[in-house]
Length: 134
Image (tube, rainbow, N blue to C red):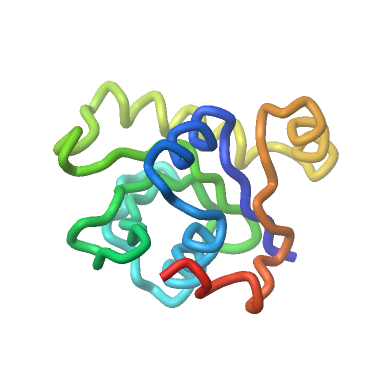
């Protein structure tokens, strides 16, 4: 069973950026199909997410921690117009966050959701919920 999460910080950022949960699930599906913008190492990947009414060139950049199987964590996001890329120091911190979340048991994930550390976007990202944001 595939589970997709976002951090509390990422939730606030995506509201301001205009990114929908459906767009994130679409991004996960694309990554499962091999469409990854950059493998940053340490189970951390960069993925462009299109904004409504814009192509991917005017998109946002997201940083996703994943085992590329059943767990996907959106942990950081930025608009290219605001930030060119992430620094090495930021990447090191993101890799530590990825290692932490990817090491969680299902019970720990459930607790993190209950404590609002993580928000579960979809449990198995149903097809009917995606592709509605464009």
